[in-house]
Image 1 (cartoon, rainbow, N blue to C red):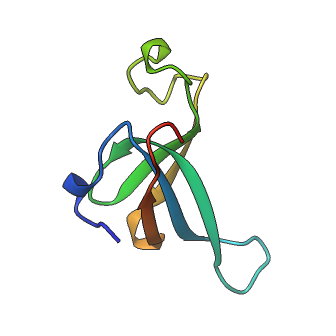
Image 2 (image 1 turned 90 degrees about the horizontal axis):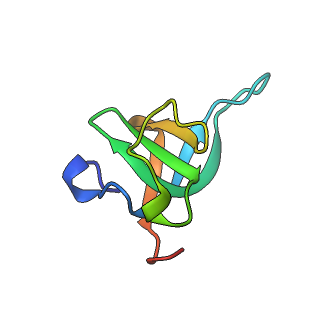
Length: 88
């Protein structure tokens, strides 16, 4: 799995498998999320599975852009990352 932020590219699509908490459960569960990489740093990545279809319509990334749905995933919980083909 790429841990170096330079190996991921903002604006490209990825599928990420990660461990997440489970309410009232006794262990973390593996989940999968597909989306456009919006933000990347040493501790977390931000994916937007709900994003503008045409990049020309998109605004610069902002947590206040309510036309996007975003998820922040802690890098230490990530088990696998795969780049999606263009136009996924």
